[in-house]
Length: 79
Image 1 (cartoon, one colour):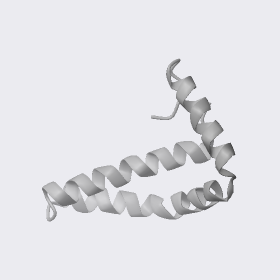
Image 2 (cartoon, helix red, strand yellow):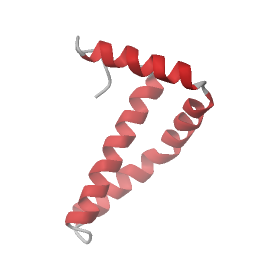
Image 3 (cartoon, one colour):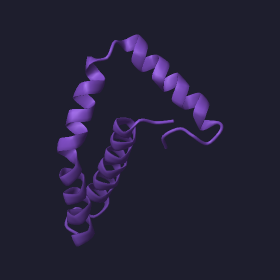
């Protein structure tokens, strides 16, 4: 089962992807501004979570990714 930090990082990545796509497709559209604002509102917490993740040994991170990937086959991984 994903931790709260893992869920938060996945959510932030999704927001960042939506914002990036919107900036490419329609850089001046109101929806694009909304997408970028949503990402920025979430960015501070995502940065803190990412910093904590970077402090972990790479073996721990790899093991966690493998665990979540295996869990994804049964529907429990982050997506």
